[in-house]
Image (cartoon, rainbow, N blue to C red):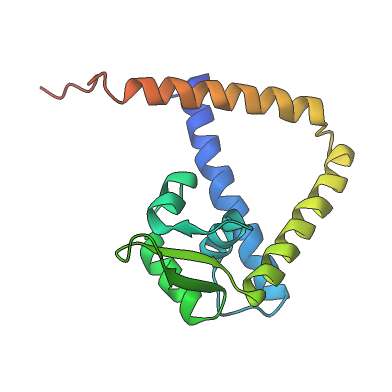
Length: 154
């Protein structure tokens, strides 16, 4: 099966995996071996916030990832600090440790380095704006399809 829609779905998945590979290579180059590429994305998405695992799961879409397990590993390796909420003792919140902030800052610098090179590859801000708009529309479309029950295998 081939159609522009199907090709786009496959491309989105391939790009996600390729970007994870880019992060993996960069972590290895920096000799950072105690955190993986998915964990580094989660860490970077926490940023300066203090979140529960549930909030973190909703905020990012970590394909094939067990967010609770990854948070546990990042706490064990010193990238996150975990604290019980003062208002609800059942709720655990996480935030970046100093080690986590340093890695998050390094990832931000990597993104900025990529942005500086994009124009040379013909990838202008205007093209990214258009792409982002189309992807947001696709996201809205898929969200609307969640309740439509369109698959029939009889």
